[in-house]
Length: 284
Image (cartoon, rainbow, N blue to C red; front, side, top):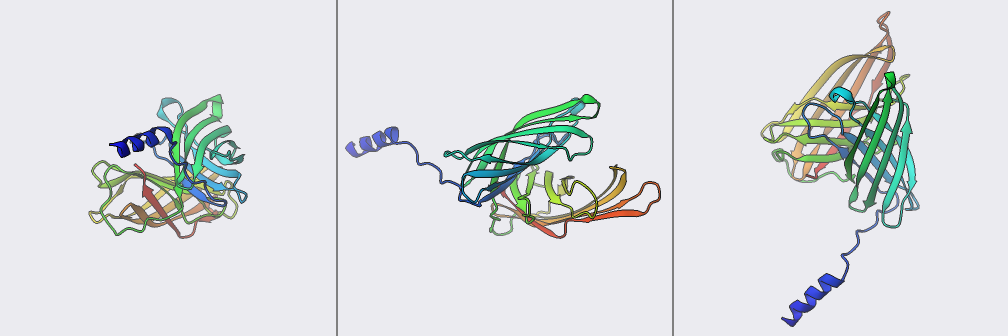
């Protein structure tokens, strides 16, 4: 009884052990996936790199704020901020790369330690016509450590966050949400450098459509679409394959683009991410 009392006293008077600080150079990736099946607003891709001195963080972020009539747009960029002793940071990311976005401002706040990072994004993007799209929502990032479990069926209703193998100027997130019955990927997104010869911006985010999952946890999908953007007619092809494993998912993805002149039909540019691997872990 005396021993139990001492243990209770210690539990009440001793503070919990602090999380280990993120080591210099540590990288994390993730973001968020909206639970909505009708829109992609409040989705994000966040990559974090701790500075070599352990006192700063570089944050690259893409966020999709809500616009009027349930539409969404994107804002993204990079920024560097001081890392406080408790692992907290706040950075304003500005940029003008998105087509149709006249001005954008992303305020990313959060904390980072050896186990990962989490926080909030406030995204404000002004688009053509003077309209403003804005949202504030949470995000989370995990270490770049792929799951090593055995192949398994997909975890029903799970949220998974992770990254691709494209680490240059990254890291870049790969995030997905599994349907409640575990039979399909309802939502997924990844950002990649497309390696275009001429096009700007060099980085783009792709929002994959629903993808059927086989009973053994494997999946494969080829997505084709055309869009007129920046005075070009772009034909994109995204090929993705994957396998759910204990604790997460691993796979490959490749995004290629052929851009033509809408007037002559002549090829004016080609883009290719090259073959990338991806992995993500279950976080919810």
